[in-house]
Length: 312
Image (cartoon, rainbow, N blue to C red; front, side, top):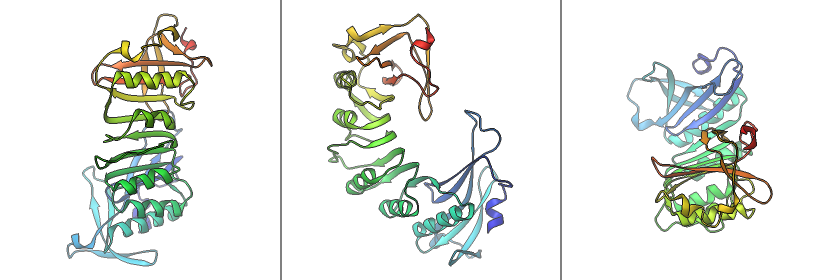
């Protein structure tokens, strides 16, 4: 068992993380070399968990902790292989192999993707370690379970790819998180955006009016959302005039030329020399991407420490 897990990892890599992936697999993500910025890491699937009802009659058995379970070698399209384990309860099996791999490499989980048994998987992960860098909630989950998970999570990155009922709402959504990305989020409101205590906010599958965007900009201009560094929202029309209504006196111009912004947790943007400056001196750049009517708002300095003025 151990040899099959570490066959591709012949010495401890400089970058090493363990992920619980959505298709009931435990992945090891590694990077060798100096770890330069932008260097792509490699995923290796090491163990999977499936229902024993899917198992054919040809298999072997292995010991995983206190369990003896059937296994088969699975070959992926790229030629890499991993062991598929079979359980009466595949989600219980996923937790067992998650513990096994973490203990084997003496490493905590870096990411957990909740696809089934959302609450049980969430509680298991947080019982195992006090904090998980990234939580992703996927597929169908009840309104109550989603609200519980997002309220209790202390992860720095929170991604929601799940579907909620049309009646779902979240009052006083003041979640503190470094980055949050919300898909299928018909429920998100301007009030939710302004109350979030986050550095990066990304919303998909919901369009805001330019009047609503104007409220968010005025909220920031008045000192709101002090940690906000990067905002991505989709609008219902391309109308910069409406977005900037009542704010034009706060526009500033730097020297002609482009400004390059490196975003927290990835993303490179190019802006013009026009910025929005509030009373405390903070400067933001913004633009509307015409392809999808995407409003991009960033606050300087960027992830590389560059300021708006550094391009003058």
